[in-house]
Length: 238
Figure 1 (spheres, rainbow, N blue to C red):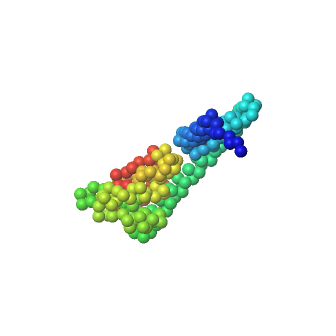
Figure 2 (cartoon, rainbow, N blue to C red):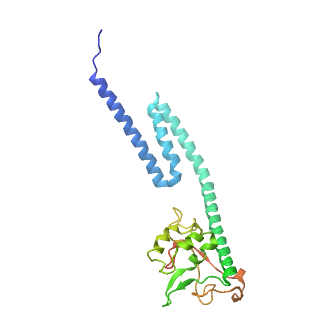
Figure 3 (spheres, rainbow, N blue to C red):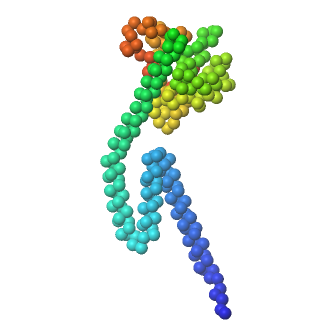
């Protein structure tokens, strides 16, 4: 019985073929990662379609024909994306603004509930014996935004940046972050979008809280909290 010896040339070709295909897989992964890194979630679609289109052309029996089809489909998809992108971006912007408005409403409701319990709005800050601000009003209303456990974890025996309290910065509730802010579009972060305007003729005189009857213009004509688009990390933040 005759035995066919192994063909070293054939084995070498198979090895080169495997390496070649592995290179293509790595290129496809690199394209996908680059698209996602550059464009975020929007880059997922082109990151998948580009390697797929390239594979279709490469493995096609008639590459010129396949290339022409891929180019035509790509142009059509680009036109559709260009037409739909403004509407998608507008929808996302509207959704983010809705969340920001909801946050303001929740903060305002928490402040009113605080007043119902303690007879006044919270002070802008709690000061130490030297009058230096130590704790923010945001900490005081945590139980009123459904975060009593986080309130219990916070220690009023140390400054806001003390050993225990500094560990809680990463737990800042999403209610304090407006997704429309440039600081919070990629994540919540440790800064806040909502600030109290502190001063003798404002809703927040400082270390004392005002009562309803201390607003001569009425609450409907008085600013309690303002939104900052840039995102600010206050000195007395949670």
